[in-house]
Image 1 (cartoon, rainbow, N blue to C red):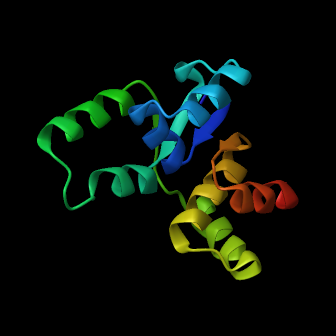
Image 2 (image 1 turned 135 degrees about the vertical axis):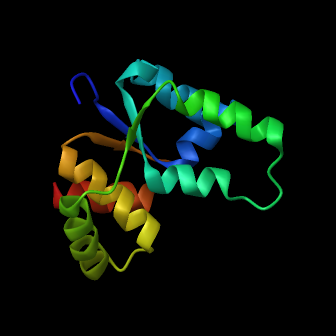
Length: 123
């Protein structure tokens, strides 16, 4: 985990892939190096399970993900996600992603302002 500072939410990775100005600005403002980034197994499932995804898109997304650290759901993350969801009444994927950032003490980068505020409340 050395050198990992950020957990990228699914919406940020989609924005990177699509070169969305808001995401590019967020990454530039924080001067983020992709080698400092990780993503949750939940994010990978969300990205690659879209029914209309093409093989080319799958290859491009996997190429982007290969540049970051992949994080599995540990028992600690599982417990934190359960508690997070009970307290904040969030969707399960968001709860797992928030819990992953909390468990590893890394910053969650998300375009979901409500989720970001909830993560910051529980730090």
